[in-house]
Length: 404
View 1 (cartoon, rainbow, N blue to C red):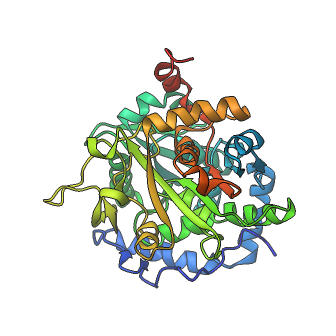
View 2 (cartoon, rainbow, N blue to C red):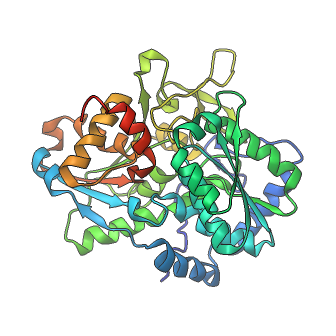
């Protein structure tokens, strides 16, 4: 059976896109017909073999799947545990984002759209969207916060090289939240010929469901690879979280495993007490942002607060609605890692295994040192290495100049 065909999970949303009380469609009337059209179209192709055969062909021969499950032997020896890295960093374009954009690009073509738009924070989703647009002959515009444009210059150049137009968004905090605001505004007035490829498992229904479905291949492969390589089912599965797509992809096929604890790691920034962080599940409250009800950072008056992280991909003030549901249901544990802890892990993994992780992924690696040693000893841990650190080199050179 084609492994890319989505599985209907027990925690799928209802027909209106609600995971419990979270999710839904909280959008202006002008957007509702567009979303209903997309929802109906997705229902027709969600389990259609011919469509997923196209996904299979591109994923295997263009993206480079399956991505390896790598036994990190030096980390394992140091921690007296079995540490396995799901190498999404080895995908074409350097991260898990391409898993999603390949499918949404094919959907855009099927729906007769000639243009795609995307929002991006760290630039990896923007690059993946621009890549798919180039491959499929679609026009592409990417909205990116001006602050992120500055700290992710390499990815901005890559998008332009691929033929995309990049809009530097100056409003608000000039980061991912504001890029998404502008992308949605553009979409409302250009929906006739434009498909919006949302990069994370957030936004109005059906996007959280779609993106989770498209990223679930990560855990489907990992589970099969564990068996093939004769490893035990994991005691822990770790993934970093911004909006939450790589984490949901990594957790999807493990959540129902009785012995497995899935743990999502948010951006602790400069520490939760500092007020400069991206820990919306730890310190947020339920509210509406970008068409969904979920946990988000907000003031007592309900104003959305600015998120912060050293990682451009984790400084989103909200979270995908499925994560809010999974936290409240106790199905997934959530914690956070600070900038300093993530940078220590960035160096640690680079020197121990010769693998330079993205700043986002370094948050998940760092969590290995937050699990008590006696709790970790003898256990099996699978970590989503969601992206590679090439994009972060300019930032890393400045941060680590006095340390290396």
